[in-house]
Length: 140
Image (cartoon, rainbow, N blue to C red; front, side, top):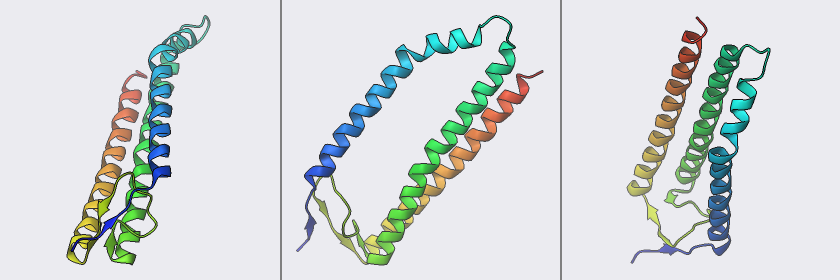
């Protein structure tokens, strides 16, 4: 018989609020940020190309951080799964009921979580290098 770990209603509520916050940030980025950036870049008496270079570098750092944070979370979940020997680990807030995996199936999930975390780190570093290189080529 398979064991189901029940969903947490508070986790579902937090997930909905997180989606609403993400939507608000996206709307801000699409509608308000372009005009502000254009005004900042085209101010009189400033070096526009230098500001563009720093804008690209800042975007690269932002993307590096935003990809490394989920990676760290995946590694932490993998460590909790390995320590408990079951997936999902005890105490994890679930959005929906999930079947508990033990033994080899849980170890496979540990490997999958670590692999995804490593992939995110590699992608973050590759993106940072590309953004920094792009910014350096625009300086000349």
